[in-house]
Length: 116
Image (cartoon, rainbow, N blue to C red; front, side, top):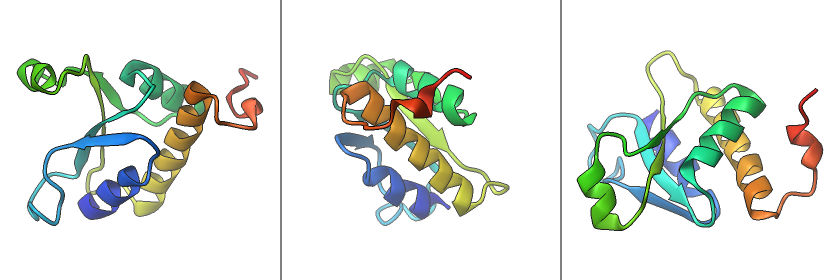
């Protein structure tokens, strides 16, 4: 799951990912911390949760010195565990793509985020 999660997040437009890839560190946990150019991490995770119910984290992730080193105010983090499927990861990535589109103005269908 770590490799699938990493590879799918890497597909996101404007993404900066932090940490070694599963290829470099095969035993790493199945999580990815990242930022999207032009999007605040808090906005991304809020939209993904509200739109699809996908739980993510945003903030310092208990790594304030690392955020200071990279010059970023916060990061988003997505993780998967043994009970998560690759299909669930794909759903989360689709939700991220929609949120990024909304925040960057590149989405065509704003009805995706209607509050019905």
